[in-house]
Length: 156
Image (cartoon, rainbow, N blue to C red; front, side, top):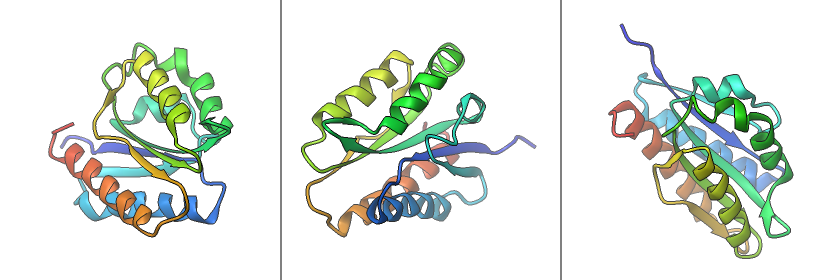
């Protein structure tokens, strides 16, 4: 029997709201996966090269800090970049940005690094911008569900 595919959710969660968003990404993924996908969730600081190498798809949740990605997210990319560059070409990913401003700089930076890694955006990015809105949680649930189902069905 083939081993399960793995969806890795990397979540930078410095606030109650971002923790709620991360929980919904995980819940949505668990809701959809029907035991065909292993769901793992790590902070960027707890994630390492081996975690990325074992993943079949990623969801990245980061905050926008001073018009850029969170330092923890950038640190992750710095630590894993060359170790996964060749091995994970085409890795499907989705991006969620919790932005207090407009998210432009953060989104551009993350997508530029992902492009440099040769990763493939599997879903449109989710930009949760401005003041907190409860639909951010539903957006995250839906994305987690979509990514896990797509991975289970071999779409991504």
